[in-house]
Length: 478
Ligand code: SAH
Ligand code: SF4
Ligand code: F3S
Image 1 (tube, rainbow, N blue to C red):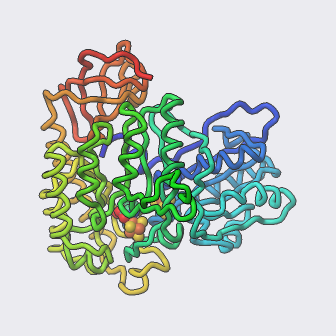
Image 2 (spheres, rainbow, N blue to C red):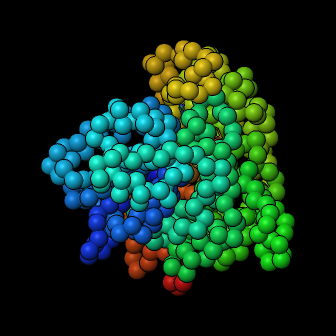
Image 3 (cartoon, helix red, strand yellow):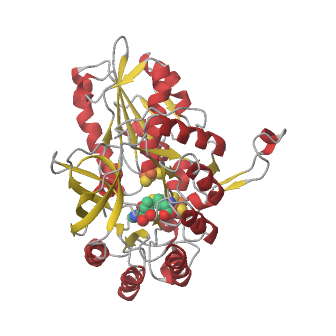
């Protein structure tokens, strides 16, 4: 896993300071996945209309939003702990309003208000347009709740306010919800039915970002390969084109915005990723050679009870297609769950052998956490003891660490095109950015600039990062 991905996966994102004159102050803290980070940018935009500017100082906020995640029990515990701390703030500043947004709000609904008395507002992921009303209501002492899940809402017309942005790369949501029913997963319950956003609004957002100096967009959805948009009434005059748009078409449309705008996407579902998508990636230099293809298990029986709707062989076929069409160097990452219900030692070893076969560049790996209301919670006992889950996870992580290192060592002596994102975490003297395959690359800063593409000769590496020096810098782009 690269540093950037660790960050995306594990850290909490906090809003930045906007100029405040005459405005009320909103502090937003976001947990969970990139979709949540992207949603917080929509929330900031909705709240700006209602007279709020974001702040990075929780102690000075008039309104505090936690945009929450329910994916595993520990994600929810983090939010509970945070609320305990916010209680102190509320005691010191009694007028402060606290809102819980996102997946945990949706999962627990009004129960949240019973369990966490100081929470004033509970809002699910499809109800953010209603926030100004809910906040106003809460200001009069009434609790504000809206957890309505929509079949249509995509927030297509809202221009997100970029929070925590490096001003180089941005997330763009292309769809919401999920229609798969993986038996372990809470997302279909917290985010509702799958719906795709109007492709023309996506292209417009990418164009605006490019114009504003951004050089990379990451298209987001729980299952981007099932993106599907049908024009319906909107193409009456043929003005918008009358054919439906699938994910490969959308990728192409965004890639054409500008060859200097990198396009990334996440997440691909192994059952849906088509050769057409792979050929589209191959066709455009600016569509990055990196695919995040969660496996969850390497054993067909376990995949079946997970309701992933593919087998080990199917997954291997997709890996083979990636290597055949995009080559050995294409970055591939994965998610893996250790200790799902009834998983045997042999089945656990199948997950590790799949990792050896696929040669993943990095992975997000978890122990199974039972989620109330899911198919797995209803049908199967959570029967693998915690210490066994932890041991299996440690084994999986160790295999991944070794393969990540080997994959990085392959690149020693090569030249990688890197988009500079900013100073490296460890030293202001160094810059960091990502390669085409999504590997973090660190190199001496010299006179280079953020947002610039540079060719970096890779001279050293560890399992997480490539190190090198810039060859022949290109002039500043944009
Ligand atoms: N839509 C993506 C995954 C979104 S959730 C996909 O289908 O691949 C991100 C990851 O969290 C999942 O890939 C899975 O590995 C992990 N995850 C989801 N539910 C979990 C649970 N109950 N316990 C442990 N890990 C879980
Ligand atoms: Fe969850 Fe499966 Fe949907 Fe991913 S595809 S969000 S794991 S239900
Ligand atoms: Fe968490 Fe919801 Fe994302 S449960 S992982 S924030 S979709």
